[in-house]
Length: 227
Image (cartoon, rainbow, N blue to C red; front, side, top):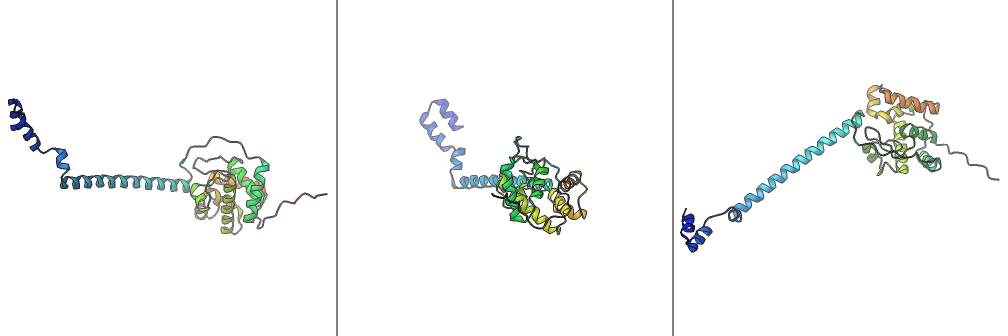
């Protein structure tokens, strides 16, 4: 009130003194107590944001795991279509991976044909990637850094298939069923799960191979006889 009267009366000196005597929000925050309150409020807001982000990340991870086990929820958008890898390029990759895992090349070839049609950019509706359709979590466990790299994908897929064949003691139908639907689904069903996709996957590959047992050893392709 005194400040207002001083301004009205034209007493500039007194008005200036009274103005500086009135505490403002800025002057209050510059006091030690104000600074402490400001810092505490900032820390509280940051903690709340961090908790919210952590909750969102946890929710996304839970959804991803459910989708991977159930093969129902689309995880990523399909990639642009690409051409199949030429035979002269993919043949040595299959041969090398088969030899490393002591598998028949024709088995890997049949799986690749069924899974991706030899297209390295293939992505399923649930996020399986590349030639042998590796889920991101599975690829990570197998040491695959880039599922769209043909060599890495085939080597990782061959390693995973070999693990499943060993797990089911050479029973190829069960190993293929686990490759498609997951080992947990095969164990719960006591055999090939009654999923149309999995049933078709196993039937198609076995039809190409003409066998229900996995050949235990890699047999290299014969080299041409040189004259």
